[in-house]
Length: 205
Image (cartoon, rainbow, N blue to C red; front, side, top):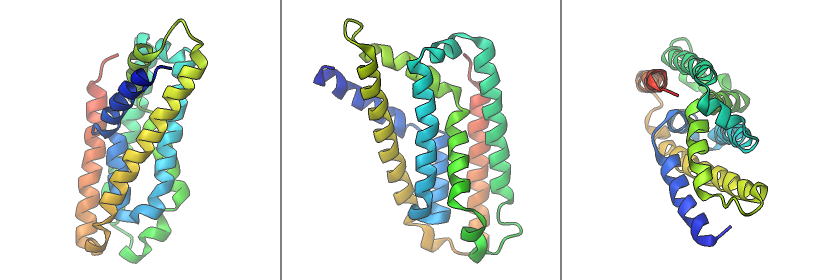
């Protein structure tokens, strides 16, 4: 792959990763509430979900989802339901938990699983990759190595951006250790998750 083409893709991938979305909300929320160390599990989960999308695009299923209204709609509404459910959970998260019990109540495994589903149930990621990858692939050259380069570049950049969001948000952790503030923050992030679900509901194939 030509270095100029790869650098152009790097710019596109950075813009894509920084664009606000459910993954961004998930990272900022986790960073503020649980700190950056525990939130690393959620970053890994987001990348696993993204990797599945990249594989689907690589084997051609991504194009099918992008072109099939039924497939897109099915995945979309699963994603909408999950984001709304996640938002409701955030609203209720500290209604019965003492603040010192938060870290014990939500494990790294739980954060990882939530993050995987956040990215996995977002069909717009597949559509984006289906639209983006062909612009940077030379059809006269073997496609698998190019897909591996583009895919790994996407994962590395997105992981770096999510780590940036998590670390930035974690700097505020020390200022929110009160039940009132934590409850308000969870309601804010819960509303943001529900908002992401609403935006996804309006998306069209």
